[in-house]
Length: 291
Image 1 (tube, one colour):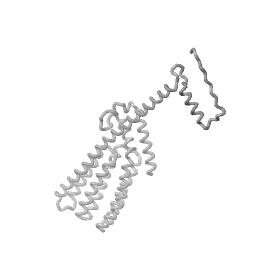
Image 2 (cartoon, rainbow, N blue to C red):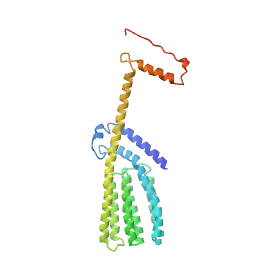
Image 3 (tube, rainbow, N blue to C red):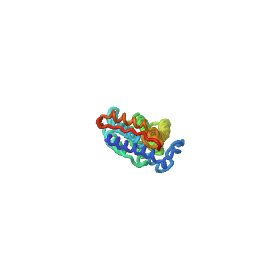
Image 4 (cartoon, one colour):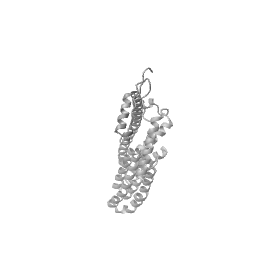
């Protein structure tokens, strides 16, 4: 399945680059030199860049979901060790609910979807991780509740860096995580909710910093895309120029036929080619004057 995704994303990646390189109406050269932060020039360009971004970075999102899926099963042993009474709850929450959602999202990222669908996956991850960890923490007692919520918040923070989605959906995922964290801190089994809420604000600042980093990464990716297209176009122009120079170097400007240099190259090539029967080679040289 991973090989199929890799092959499909590579095709989408190559097609997006080819279209961006050749379609100068959709992506004119002036856009490549502008210091814009997002591909907001046209809907067609935005759609093309979405395809490129998915193909280039979807493997990261799938890798995160795969790691989170495995880690969820590993945490079931930890839950049982710290509190044997959590055996059945962790089997249901982590082993069934959380793992099923993560597996579904992993399969969803196997193909490019609408931008809002891909963005909503981060919100789903935030809700799943926060609610699952908060429920298990509440069943395990005050000490586990705070630790599980903190761990869940930082788990969501790592997802922010890996999901190639629009920044507005990154903000939505961050807001969902912060609201759920603050809400569970206030209503959960904590003796001093005010102190817990101030701690929640501190950790919320950390996840906001991750979101800011993600915004800078999106800006860098867009500039990298433009730089790559500019490089491909320059290579194409250079190849065309070299082809023209090759023609000029090999043809006589007056008659338009091969000159001595080109003829000598053909002779050397034919003579060194083992597929030619050397006994059948003949050369005819004419010196024509008074053209």
